[in-house]
Length: 330
Image 1 (cartoon, rainbow, N blue to C red):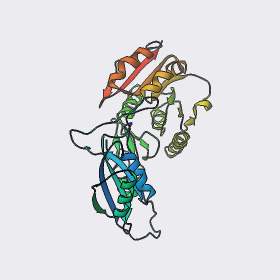
Image 2 (cartoon, rainbow, N blue to C red):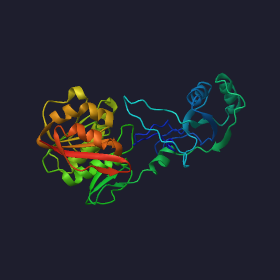
Image 3 (cartoon, helix red, strand yellow):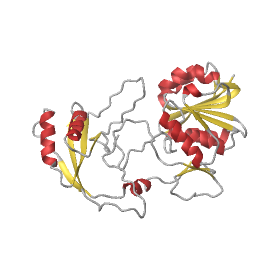
Image 4 (cartoon, one colour):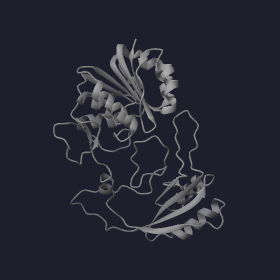
């Protein structure tokens, strides 16, 4: 699966490497260096050497180096999925290393030196000139408002709200997972949009950007708490809640106060869902409901078997190979 074409904002689970293009923020009215072109070099190699070559190019002066599937966009494209605790191949069998150099850098000499250090002979590569651009504006142009339902939209801050009377979540792409574009996020948002009752308390376990926590409050929840193991996600959740003018709380797992919730949402991955079942059930009130996503279609039966110990489960919903389980605690 190829890396992002502009900057490494991610809302997926597939393994990618950072994009070779760098965001270059600036403000209107501030002086800015004249645009300078770059040299972009593409080298096809196998998986045994791709990562070492990329690292070596960086050591010898490349501005950036990325690894992509050499067959991206063809019938031979190789999707790579992974999650913590599950061994996974991290590099495509046939990869291309894309390196970026300054206009006046000796790219050919750097490539030759890096190739020798990696034990490569007769290394072929292609090059092209890449004009400098306003990468912030170019990145923003890739993100349009996302319609979840008739009344629920995800809208980046630089866009006008497409539906003035709709529930609009203001959310910008960032380092924490969750912008609304991934099927698992959409599946959970659709559940909240149709099933959440006014005044209910919500726990969003594995909150990422806080999108589900914030959506719950905007859709009528009485309170909502987000939890994530990543401090960066907790900070992102707080910032996004402030941007949306909602009173959401965000914690690391150890800081989560005691108590149960009417609704527990966990949009994470299958492996942590396996391990967290008993804890998530304990956090759900009797008669309360659970919503699980981040699992693949083929993992429905296994995860359903685990959670049926505590919950009466509804039929699974799927989208683009991903699944959502929900149910009511007995």
